[in-house]
Image 1 (cartoon, rainbow, N blue to C red):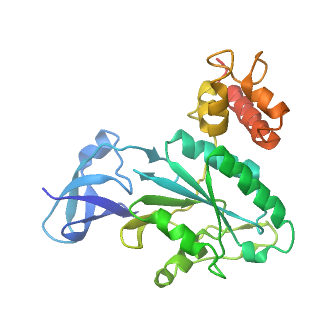
Image 2 (cartoon, rainbow, N blue to C red):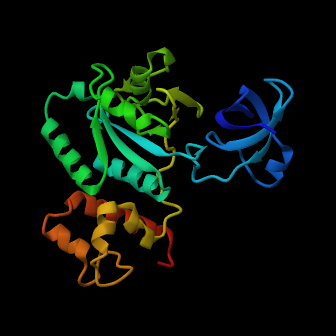
Length: 293
């Protein structure tokens, strides 16, 4: 039987791309019985008599999966954050980074709308330096001026990428700038709410460049750390994970333990105070949800 990749899911139908082109399929009834839901990004085995009447017979093992947005086998997450409108937030960025790190997805920080910056750009540049020091790639872009698009494009080749971020930051605009023929729907920022309205209603993999696939998703509807245990949070902050190797205790949580290399790095201003604050805030949030800790 032929194999392919689900590139779109809509209204109970799965659109599978393989050697025979794109075939519209349904899932087998046994999937529902076994609580298996095919996801965009899944590698599947299917059978079909024609292009519009196929059935998915098997879902291959996944290397990762996200629940919201529902997508599997993601290689990297392009975390799109605007310089302004809505204002850049390290707290929100760190929430996204923790969730991406926990799911073993490579993040790329993309700060867009830089053409709208009238002042305060030096602060953004300082953030970029600090996140790069932590181990992240950071790119400045503009959908209007096309600044940074040539730098971004090579990262998309040969990978399944998720564009994720707060609504209104310009994810669809950025994709339109990368591939104008897409003509994805965009919306302006609500001046009353200070944020955008979601314009993407379903998950679909879009071809970018020669062999890249990008998911323009409805965004993470949940940024809660429901699956993460306190000791795991350390490894969702790569610079804290590196420093923790020098802590006295193996499962040091870097809050009240003695001879903690992370706290020492904060005091020496080697670790940005806001990153450590977010770590402690997230840790407390996880502890509140998991009383046994």
